[in-house]
Length: 379
Ligand code: PLP
Image 1 (tube, protein in one colour):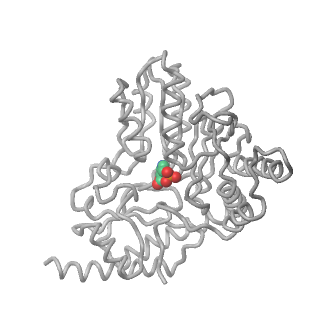
Image 2 (tube, rainbow, N blue to C red; image 1 turned 180 degrees about the vertical axis):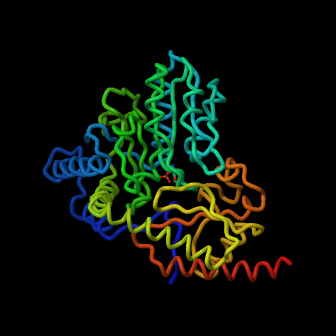
Image 3 (tube, rainbow, N blue to C red; image 1 turned 120 degrees about the vertical axis):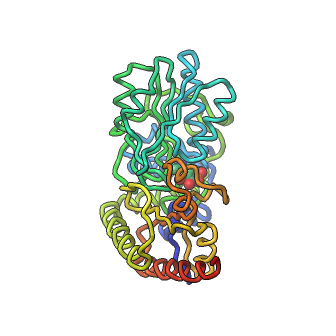
């Protein structure tokens, strides 16, 4: 028995998705490129599954390419966009609080001669659209801005970024990493005005190893993988049918209960704020996270790594930031310019539709015990 409160790291596969994967593996396991019935049936199903995922994004199925994960989508979108615009300039704008999948790709491009402007958040984790407007130049070829920050839950001004690009008249394509936004906050790529949008399956109760990249019709990205011409020739390789089936099932289920889940998580987050600060009054809330599933807090003066391990021993799972940091301090919390005591004690709590008040209560009790016992241990 454990209490899982780290749904921004990954989510459990929902039964509908696991069942869909099982059927794709054991019944409809043909190669979609094969010409006999087993293959053509698999191809027809991939077509349906693509429509399901596209419906989740409110885009056309032809605008969606399946990838292996969010990281792949981010890498491809960014490298593909600057390649497309290679004759128009070498300036990129992104934010200091993007996921490593975006930041490391941008750093790689810096080593190749690109100039990157990293927009800084305010102390609440918000990005000011005016800063983006000021950063745009005639040679800006890409703006990459996430929709929901994975460590704060802040919602970034992506639609405003699209408007600013238009107003500035620069050639920039707009990429949005919506890995933490997909089926958590309402949006469509069209409403955002984005050219490229990354999503990932394992954040929405599909298995790991599947994601998708939205490529707006008319944006002619170069193929990521050349070969047999699958995925419209953009990403060759035999389709991962069981992963795609599960992704589609998770999207169908997530869409069906979106409003209910959204409200449920928002209520649970409000409950968590009450329960956690009630149990440990010195707990600090970090940032202005409006997304319903992510809450950043800090136990000032306590090392978050130590608290995470202490809670883990009690069967309560939260993180000290993005799972990708592997013990390094979070660049996101650092970007807020918080006092060291608060920075050191930062914890991310994240919910899903199957998180309960009992999970939150267990965390509150765990934090109270951490505050009492770890304090004793340190003093
Ligand atoms: N972008 C954001 C905002 C994320 O939170 C994550 C995962 O934590 C990723 C990208 C990477 O996605 P994946 O784990 O599917 O590679």
